[in-house]
Structures are given as C-alpha cells and as structure tokens.
Length: 579
Picture 1 (cartoon, rainbow, N blue to C red):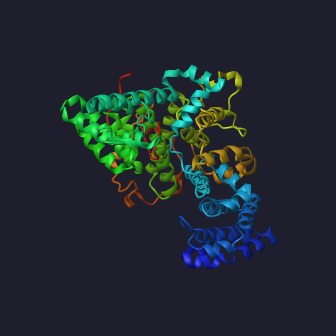
Picture 2 (cartoon, rainbow, N blue to C red):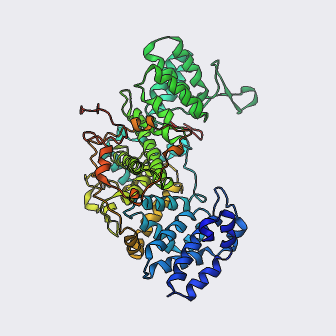
Picture 3 (cartoon, rainbow, N blue to C red):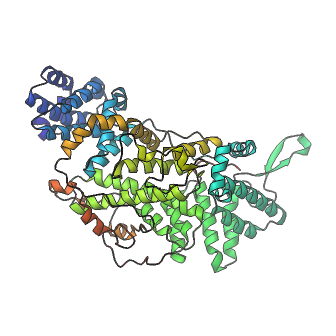
C-alpha cells in the first residue's frame, strides 16, 4: 500500500529491500499472497529506482540492486499458475517495460526478459504492443551508434573502380541501373565537377546555379566540398587553395553566390532554384532552422515544390515533419530522389508518433487509440512502398527496413514462430532481389542486401537503436513465443479485437495533414487537454471504429475527414549533408 500511494522517495526506500523480497518469493513459491504482493511491490518500487533519462536519478541505489535476480524472480513467478494471474502479469509488464534504459546489462544477462518484451509485441492490446516495442528500443539507446552521415568520395570511387560483386550488379540491372543511387551519385559528381570547371573559365554564377539546383534534386551527395588548387612555382611542389577570381574558395560556398545570381535575373520560373540553392547550403552547414524558415517562405510562393516540404521534414518536430512529408509527397514538382527522401522521413515521424501516442497516453479517450494505430499503419504502408520501389542501394533502405520489420511483428495478422513470413526462399528471388508481390514484400534477405550495398562503398552499417532492436526482435522471437505466449494469452483474455485491416497500397494515399492541422502542439508534444479518463475497454482496438478514421476510397487516416479529393488515378561531403 505504501508503494502504491507513496511518492518516488518512499518507493526508493522500499526498493532497497528488493533483494529480500525476491528471496521471500523464492522461499515461498506456493504462497499466492506473497507472490502477488511481491510482484506488485517490486514493480512499484524498482520502477522508481531506475528512473532517469541520460543517467539514473538514484545511481547508488540502482547499483545495490540485483536486477537480474529481480527480473528472474518476477518472470518465474508469473509463469506459475495462480488464482489471480492478471494483476501480477500487468505489474510484471510495468516493471519490465519501464526499466530497460539503465539496466540493459541485466536484460542481456537474462535473455528471458528480452523474450518477454518481444512476445509482448504480439499482444492483442495495442498499448502492450507499443510499450514492449518502446522498451526494446530503450534497451539499446545508451549503447547505440549514431547513423552515418558522412560520405567518403575516395572510398566511393575506389569501390566503383573495383566493381560491384556479381549478385549486387544483377540486382541493379533488374531494378534499372540508371535509377540506382550509385549511378546517380557518380554521374552527378561528374556533372558538378564539369560545372565548376566551366564556372572557372566563364565566371558565370547564374549558369552554375541552374546546374547545381538540378543536381540537388537528383541525389543527396550532389555538391562536393572541393576547391581549386594552384601550384606554388616558387616553392616547388607545394599546392595552395585559390579562389581563382571567384567570390568563393570552397565549392560548397558557391551556393549562396549562385543563388544570388539566379535570383537577380528575376525570372519567376527560376526563383525556386535560388531558394533550393540557399536551403541546400543551410543544410550542409547544419543550420536546419534557417533551411526550414526559407522553405516555408518558398512554399508561400510555390506550394507545389516538394523540396521545400522535404527541408521541413528535417525538423526534429514529429508533427510538423510528418505534416510536411505527407503534403510533399503529393506535390506536382517532385523528383524520385525527393520522393523517397520524404517517404523515409514520413516512416520515421509516423512510427515515432504512433508508438508515443499508444505508450504515453494510457488514459486517453478511445479515439486516441485509433489515431495512434492510424499513425503506425501509415508508417507501415509508407515503409512497404519505400522498400518495394526505392533503389535497392539507397542508403536509407536499412533504416526503413528496420522500421518495416519491427512494424510487421507489431501489426501483421498472422506471424509464425519461425518468422517465415519475413523470410523468402531462393526460388522466389530473381538475381537476389525479391520480385514476388507477396503480403510481406520486405524480408530479412532484402535487409542483408541493403547491408552489402553499404559495405561495398565502405560504410559499415552502424549499430543504431533501430538496427539493434530489430536484430533482437528477430533473434528472440521464436523463443519468446514459446516461453511467454501463454502469459499474454491470459493478459489478453478480455481483449476484443476484429481482424487487422488489410493493406492496399494502391488505395492507401496517406494524408495525415487534416488530422495534424487539428492538433495544437508545441514542439511536437501532445497537449494535456488530450488526456481524459478511460474505461478498461478503451485500450482494446475496435477496427470497425478504426475504419471510420480512414476514407473509404483512399484510406486516409484522419480525425476530421472531409470530402476526399484524391479521386483520380493516376566528391567529399561533410557530416550533416542531407537533401
């Protein structure tokens, strides 16, 4: 009762006795009351002991606890038959999903704890699913590596000269070699260098700007951070950088000068190009707020220019980023490169928001559950489209693939213990690339291929949070189902769900902008006004109601759907480069 009613300080005091509680529970395994009160007390008190973001709030207390013993005792207790198992399972779930961040070593030392989280991703309760996925992601947060943002042109050119391995070459030939990222990077690099040499001779910054803007819309690594060199004849072989009479020395610094030259011509049809040059420059210099501000001004002049929306997606704000991605994907002025850049941002923003809504708002009204699910389904569908259509050597293929595999485990209606739905037999492959249109079009073999393309150009796939969580989910899934599926069957006994809605890529034109426009948010966080008291049944997903949140024609998830309007068919780069 004290841990139920008391604050963090009281709970931490009781947490000091956690190891004595676990001993009592082991010594009296058949005592129902000891088991029930032991699990509840440990959940309340240990959760207070592990609180903290960058570091635990009570490090000394946390070091004194035998977390492995606590996890093992709690999980072994809930595995045994009990008269009232549900309350114990709920508190075990609270303990294990809340404590992963600062106790990762204990989970790795006791893999059954990870099995529990992975098995929970298949619960019938959406909050349980997302809580377990969120806990799995936090498990690797402190050890994870940052995503690689650098590009080594020398390594890239060396790899091209060595040539692609035959099976990777076959994959690009099947996809269309001129549409591949390797080809576009190589050709755009060559065109950029030619443009710089031409500018050196003519000093025509206007012509340079038009060529640069065209290249920026084709590939991410379009503007090389090179420079002109001259030999010091008096000093022998020493070489120095020189502006050669131009208003810049480093080639990246040519962008604002070229933008000024384009803008000075006052041609309405070329004003977008000037803004694109300045936005790219801000992105290179990692001045994202400046890039976003300029993009918003550009949209006032031309709302059909997708690159402006893409710049806004680079904002850390999930709400504005997702809104811009969804609007940008429907712009008329869009290139394949910009399309897939925005699509991968839409996956990340929608996935983050869906998990957050279902994990952080346990008392929200019923509609909020369906809204969270709509975000996850949106992320799932965009991820599926991306991995089906984007170049197989696209550098974001890995990250989108991690999302797709995790969301597949989270949302697929049927999933075998051996994950056969995520595998594919070799006879279903043509030259290594999956061409079969199947329910699960992305699979583990495709992810391996994405890794091989990355390694080919000399970039070891970084151990990001998503990568580590995806690998853990795949590694533990079979054992997790065998060990804990019966536990979640007990927990889900009162959950009523209908079948998951089918994915229809042709009809699902995700447009979350109407929903997002209605959300009054600050810095992407949900307002307190969204919280309200909910009954137990609020946590269950009623997909009949869920379908009301999607247009019957296009499938758009939205709270305030109006009449649907989509009725027709129709060289070296510095860290921080994007767009």
